[in-house]
Length: 335
Image 1: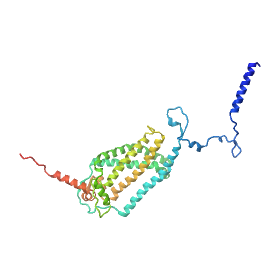
Image 2: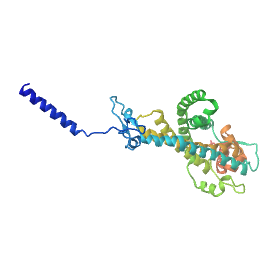
Image 3: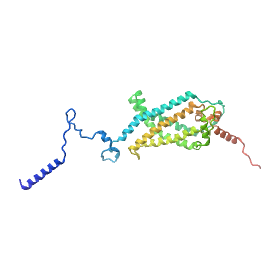
Image 4: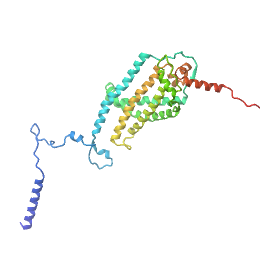
């Protein structure tokens, strides 16, 4: 062996020994049964989930969301959706139904004090009723299909089985998506048509002082809409805006949003929708079982004169005055 070859061998040997010395020796770890445990040195899941904000890998495709392996905040959202929303939604909705039932048992149906007069007056025009029923029907459909998303696995799945539940839920999801466009149009029409009549006035304070029409010994004055109806109007517009915006974010996922924003949109959509359902349950009760003659306003558009006098006296006086002016012959100039 030449001198150069020997020198090269020495250099390679020294280099290998240096590398071996630099790498710390790791003793093999054994499990409780005496078998080698190859995962003993792996970082446990709990430690990984503490990483902020998420656990990511490396990918070659443009969609950066696909690199997210585990998102710890997703477990918080899952707990909200599967536990908090179930309990909270059930308490709010069933509690509202129970309170309305209790109110009916205590007060019964509020009758027209002087009975029906037999005379009718127009309260809502055809297009006004169309806007209301467009919103109402679409809301009921969205409410039922939306509640299936939240409570279907608990209530419906055990009754009809997994295959039928899968078919029903798939159809309900498509219906929910497409009916949402009709629902968005309804509140927009209502906001435009009834905006001026729902502005707060001094008479609304008097209406509250007189018990809002629920105390039989007191008369609560009101214009076209009383304070309670105005409150439903403004709360419905606010809730409708919130569920519409959050709903479109869910309908077009990750269009300008990230994972955290999508989760926030789902939370807002679910919470506001549950509260919205409770609000409309109260509105439906008052307009049907709660007050005699109220449903006729949106049913036929006409209400009994005594009903209008009892619940919207200022509006009735204005309507009667307008009718009197229309009946009077117009003055003709002298020739």
